[in-house]
Every structure is written in C-alpha cells, then in structure tokens.
Image (tube, rainbow, N blue to C red; front, side, top):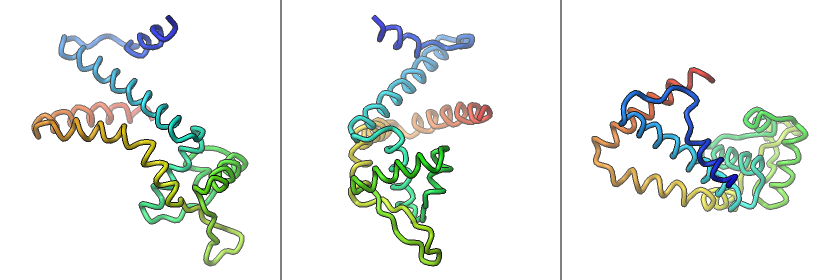
Length: 165
C-alpha cells in the first residue's frame, strides 16, 4: 500500500494538466522517465556498495581523471557542496578501499591531488553500465527524425527548468 502511494505521487503534476491527450501522454512519459532514472540511480548506488556521498565524490574524481584534470579536496568541497571535514572523511573511506590515491602537488608540499584508481573507474562503470546501456540501446533503435524530435523536446524542457536554478 505505501509503495502505491509513492508511485502515484511521482506521477502527479503539481500544475494544470497539459491541454491535449498527446500532451498528457508526454507528461506521463516524462514523469515515468524521471521515476525510472531515480530508481536506477538508487540501484547504481546500492550496487556500488558505497554511500551516496562517496559514490558522487568517486564519480566526480573518475570524470576528472577522464578529463585530465587535477582535483584536490577543495575542489570536492565545492562539487559536493559540503564541508572540509566531510570531504576528509569521504576521501579517507575511498582511499581505504583503494579507489582514490593522494598524489603530492608538484610545487606545493602542503597540498595534494586526489586521483581515481583503475578500480574506481571499474566500480563506477559497473554501477552505471546497465542503466546507460539501456538508454543507448533505445536511442540507437530510433529513426534519426524521431531522435531529433525527442532531443528537441527534452532540450526545450530542460532549458525552461534551468531558469529555476
């Protein structure tokens, strides 16, 4: 019973319904996608065997590695919007699991960089691969004109939502 309430609440628009049947089906599809994305994020977090904060930090560090960026604890503080103490605890846990290495800064002996290890890259990829593979598989099946139309709708909605951030 409680899960039924949760499912139905996430299908509810807190605004007027779209005017057309097609518009209502589109809003239902978007809300379904949002719910499925949220559920997949929870699944990825559980499969990673990391806390939400630790996984988020690890994802940022893996992305930094992929982008060739040197990231330090202060960068993680900004990206995670949290305190120095929290970042220290997160990094300590990730180092203990061999997901992160502290690398000395080349010119500032008081500073260090945080580098995601190969194991970290594998953990993040394994946690998100099923979710991302499913998205890519559906996209690859779409005729180009449908993919363009869908991309346009998603971009327009995202642009409108960005105004509230």
